Image 1 (cartoon, rainbow, N blue to C red):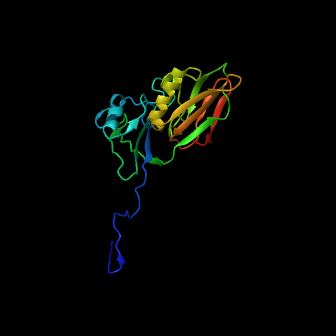
Image 2: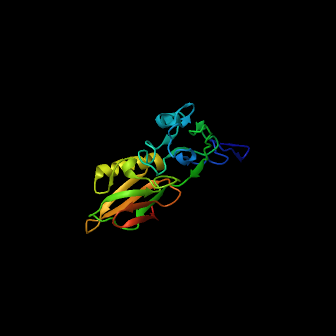
Image 3: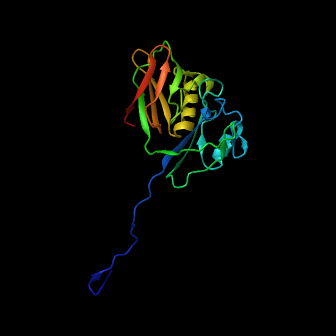
Length: 218
């Protein structure tokens, strides 16, 4: 349409900066910040921490690992990851007290890109058991023992891998998958895909020792 020889544009045009995609915003709660090395006697929002932390976090749109790491074993630390997808402008707030009644302040961090990894060493079919994980999720303070966290991690057993994957999804984002394939000798190649982690994982096996993972293209 024109008027007096001047073209008139019709239709809505977007202006300004497009919204920033949300990042994986996470904080870690370490049991070593109490006096016993466990979460016994801790509270969250005035109720027992151990039995209520999942629900209290979920009430504000957050996900956490359940159970917490190494919940049945000491001296390995007991840790919890709490996370949500956001831009950091309005982090949730919780009142967490350790067993001495001292407040625990959450420090929120962002990971804005999912990463994928592959084990740098092939796991032997003669020994498919993973004894330790480091890290299980973002910034855990120590090794995670599968046996005392989510169950035996036997990479030859799809049901065992499913348990580990479910726990990773609680800790590293819901799109995390664990893929196990075999080479020509029947040994195991492990990939951890689409995980929010700040650094490469390591798994420990009794036969080959500590296996660092290297980043691959997702």
